[in-house]
Amino acid sequence: MAYPSATLNVMTAAARKAGRPLVRDFGELENLQISMKGPADFVTSADVRTERILIEELSKARPGYGFLGEEGGAVTGADRSHRFILDPIDGTVNFMHGIPHFAISIRLEREGQLVAGVIYNPVTDDLYYAEKGHGAYHNNKRLRVAARKELNSCIIATGLPMMGREGHDKALKETTAVMATTAGIRRFGAASLDMVYVAAGRFDGFWELGLKSWDMAAGIVVVREAGGMVTDLEGGQDMFAQGSVLCANEHLQPQLLKLLKAA
Image 1 (spheres, rainbow, N blue to C red):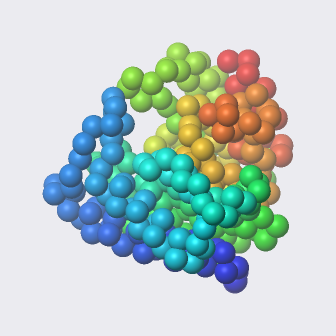
Image 2: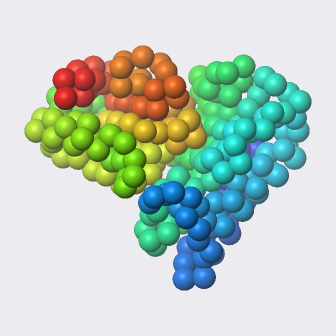
Image 3: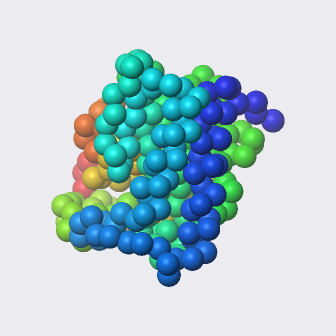
């Protein structure tokens, strides 16, 4: 059994508290207040409230830390060496359509380095967490990436650009190339959960373009601590600047990178 650090306890407690109202909202979707933020990009009252609860709870336990949230943007704290990156609901469209596949995502940076991540699906009560140098866990069970070495036996996950977003042609070319080489592709609609599924060995790899830092921040920590490799789609470490991510085990990541570059 894993014994989380004080930092992870703070992060998981905040995620669980923010998740309780989401479970109620999920059961009453017809009453949920929804507004348009852009083409096929929705923000709900639940997103805003969840981020507010996360900031309130994390600030109580770690006063002075900064924040970067999907809804509220950047907030500089008195302690400039620490910052939480928040995605209150990763998979908002799933949430709005009654699909129980979405998550609260929290990552902690120290001096600009990723040190801890928590991803929590409140409907299923699945908690994924990791701290640098201490392994990755799912509900206290240690996580390890799958050990497959050949793409023809692998299931690979991806994300596809929504209406109004750039990159449709590129995404289709990449998907076609991966479909022709693997056992199958999955598109579940929540990047953070796709990444922890790689960490858990459920998916053998995951790639996506057009992501923001809060979409993948916590997942990067979890995959790395589960023994996986994480890069951008150029093979470098500029995932946030590039807005892209590719993760898999050490055998498959180079194969996928080569395949996606060729596409």
